Length: 485
Image (cartoon, rainbow, N blue to C red; front, side, top):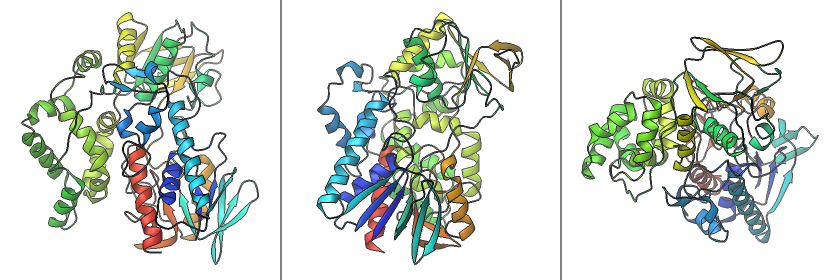
């Protein structure tokens, strides 16, 4: 069996690692990607040290069933300068995590080679396909590669230009790497950042740490900042688990309601002698963002487990619960609570939160809610409308692409697959995929040639899949390849 992997980011690394550790190996693997740096994807490219991993090592392993894999890799490196003292964990630059992904990929490729499976890397994007008994992948560089199984591991798309500013001098639609887009800005420029999530925080922190002296304004509709991450504690859920979620759905004709998940969370907290109402007020309460930031920084070591528990179960039970939820509940969560869920699952680390608070207190950073329009001016600069009109010299887009967005370099391939009936779109976005095996689903029937790994799959959560989530998906895909091929 020859496997083609389309994309060479974290999902591909997890898949290669799972293949290398499987009881059986394919006859060959070809990986396709035209990106300048393999195995790192969009988030983990070489960049400035201010761009940190936003999660502690125990939840960043890319090896399924081995949560300490990344920690062991870190143990061989001097990371003392990156310790977040409030978390008690090293939070290294994302470029360093990219080195971990590269090393894991190289190790997997070497292990596969020793087992007789050659891994070939084609440095070109796949733009189309045809069928000749097998799937034949066509690349932008003119390659035609036949494969028995093909895996779409293309990652997320690119940010959208919501205000039509592309081409305007001073506008940056893709902020990463910040070493290229931020480091060269005039120090006194007023920088407006579209968004107030983790990417916006990265921009503000990098500007502050690189000697920028001008004002920085974070623009968003809500004007809210991400939650602040708390010091990890050992939690072992017994009620809100993937197994419990599946059992609950089975009892109700495979349709799960969000209210049932809330009940499980209430039961989980009660078993820990924790108050649910205190937790709920923290999650859904309306509060001045600066007051909340200050309070949450003070609560990094707080004994209440509610936010920690919810952050965990979003990642552990969430992928199981999401495809089982009633359509109306999925729509409600995606449209009304996206920001809260995303902030809970990917909170701001205390190191960055302290810098942001210092910038806010000094007046160098401000939050503006209700932005409605941004216009490029003929002579340079921009006018921002958010209830009043004001000017900025530079605008950076820090709004990440929505879930299920197809990267531009993959659009022609996805179009060809849809036209050929090899994949099928889901009404709420993404491509239909069979649970566990990740095989493409068309008309309720799995396609044996194509698999979908990561956030392009319609049954994936609408927040970015973390490395352990990708690793678990990859391990299930590999079991399906050799168990039901």
